Length: 378
Image 1 (cartoon, rainbow, N blue to C red):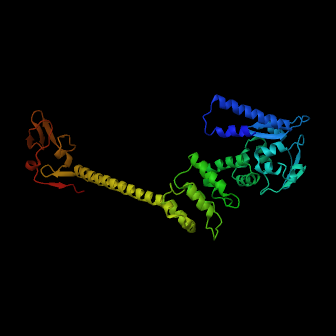
Image 2: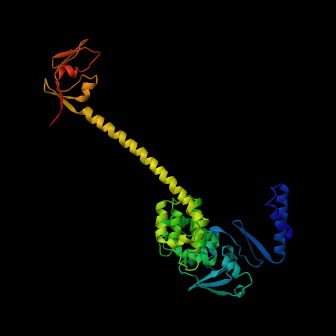
Image 3: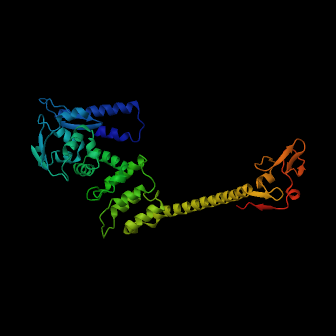
């Protein structure tokens, strides 16, 4: 036994090799042989070793997955009758200790329940016991356990029974739907402990489901009961441990300060330094964007004024017809409603009064043709 433990510890410092793997196999085989010699047998389910009593007369075999569901609440091969509140279930010790820390400690021989046929257990909330037993037997989560109306009962009962795998799946589901679940009045310390909130923050960060300020809002909505002496110790720990202030906007921080101002009194000043530095950077970035937008607005306004002036009509005092100002400054001769003619190699004759020789079409010289140009008044 000691040789096998020493072999396992050496794997942390030595690169795995063929010789080391062989030594581990020999140590494992030796350990299994010793367990068998004292009347125990080893079952391996989902990389989990379960040691149970060996009984040659029994035909009961520990299986995993959907095949294990056939034994849920079945009297055949059951060795315990457990009363969960007012519900009674036939249970098998081999499955109860598989995923529950509570039953692993209760039925390991140190308590009288080990030799009792009928055991009474008072769970925090009734109603979903059978679905939790399904998970303890098979490792398969019933979808009803994680529904909005049942997830808080699942959290309470799974936490009481020490079913860590079910709590992890519930935390993963909670992190993806926190905007709905976190506003429930059941999301408080008496039902959801700080370890579960920490799992929500960790899994949500790992799966990249949080936006800026979401982690801070989750801690604030957790609604930890105010403690006059310690002053929100668990909330303060969560804020620091999971770095909830690092990716928090100024608006979210103002909301949190308004909701629980006393919570932030326990935090060190250094925790707010990153928020202050980011606020300065955001302010500089916003000011730069505003200056860029002001330049764009100024240029666009100038362009609009220029176009407006170019499209403005002016009137010829001699022919009393209107002509766009742009036509007077460009080389276009196509002007609607303005009489005139174009002669090849001679140019444009406005009102048949003056011919301006030019290359291509060019309007007449206004200084020689019109006495003045008045803006069009309608």
